Image (cartoon, rainbow over all chains, first blue to last red; front, side):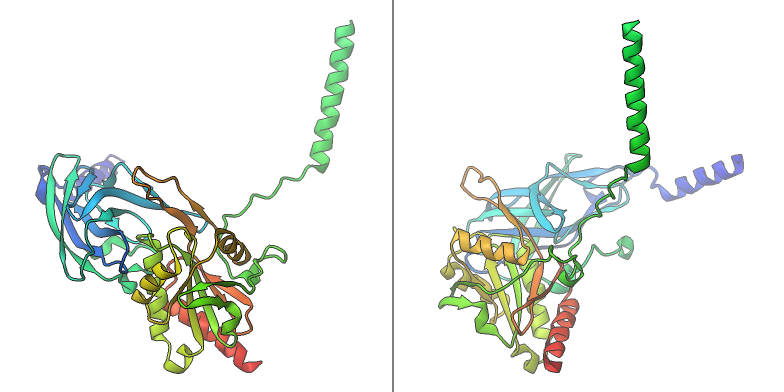
Length: 159
Length: 211
């Protein structure tokens, strides 16, 4: 039994990043895009993945962009087939894991676009996290991607 | 003494009630989590009936009956919807693109707005072709939309407006499939893949061919 415990402790030491301090570089944003919406649509949203390479849980607290009057963090609740979109205070990014902002779940909602977005345009987006760090992104505008958006979230093992 | 007799009577009554319950009480089976299933699998009486309707399209009135002989795919949503509707409509558009041209001739896709206050026929004419040139958007009076949604088993609920007067509409996100005879054949759940949609459409076309 003590042997098993020490083996587990050793395994934990090997898995957990030791001595890494949380900073900007520990949170890595990938596959970010803003959705191109049909003409005349006043709202859009941004999807992305945020990986947390630190040993502590992180939270995305706020997003800001000059292209929209209001920017909020939202999620969807699938209530027996009825999709209920609701604002959330934060999006959790677990230590060593990632947050997936994808269709049917979390997204950065851009409310009241100041002007229509063009396909391929890059939208400035600033993310603020609970460790006080911020990241400034230039996020491309893309059409809805049917291949990426069908079905349940993909397995996390790819990255 | 009177209290004792009263207590004995009470105990006897409760014991009888307990025996009765033990003998006759059947627990109500726990309701399973609701899932969107093909309507054919639902018990009779609970299946939405579907059926004909007339709503306002880009060039005036559009009746479901106009599309007899075609498989009709119906999606209920609203044009301000940032995620769920564009996702569903782009999957639907991909499915239509994946059909071969002869099949495509026999399919019509319809977007019905559950937000008729903002989604006028003009707004829908601007919105729908973004996804596929063959997709048409329909609107109507609040009562007309409610009647069609109920007939097809779709539900929606307008949410409180924010300071700027903007509001979201919670809504079910199934795609309803009407066979070439105009009957509701079933529904596909939210985020059904183009392959699933194509398979269901082909099944309906094949069934119509053998009749």
